[in-house]
Length: 310
Image (cartoon, rainbow, N blue to C red; front, side, top):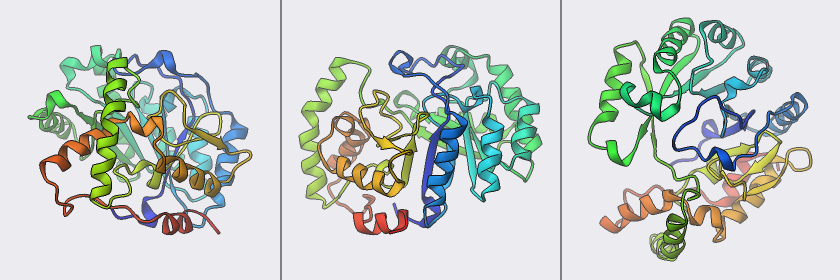
């Protein structure tokens, strides 16, 4: 994966609350809250300090659509010249909200629709037909002004075809862009068995990574800056246990947070150790121990010099 200025992303979690009851989400482990206007303004001030303007992705562990100031937040960031994306399950993105978001300068929206229609209601705890209509309406309102992207899940049990079926379904409704997401284990917080297995396997994974001369196999610490609803810098949005908060935007710059973050990532920290991204890549490397198809990362110094003003 090549690091480019255009690919610097800041994930801003404006809410950890959600209107869905997804069967894979560890809701009981979340600290719930909304980002305040003052915290959001401080986020924008920190982004203004960066030499290269990042893309802002309003997403996180909750759904941004439950925040009453979503449209205002999009407008504030867009007015400063930032590209702004939102990720949502779509249930509350009605045609009226869609129009307001497009008018506010939204660059694009990712609608999370991980399953086929016949599984959707049980998977999300939301009415599929209502979400479907909202996505169709948003696409119509957006036209050429705003990207409308459907995010689908590439889970282990559907690797043999349903992704194609999902794309076919949405293409028939006028959707042209898709993002395929692999299953993530949220830093192995589901079960003691999974945690114990990953703790045992991690040393072998590290050896294999080093044998190939690789620094890492996850793009998150290098290309994505994660800011929680309370202003905390986090090493990874998938750390639902919140064990990796590195500091806060009110007392730490993005550059300083990234230096601390990369140092944290270089250690055998518990969050990365139990993440299935390493284990999925481990399986691939074991099948073919050549590095020609393994994505390499830039060195720390070049990364830091590009992220923020020195």
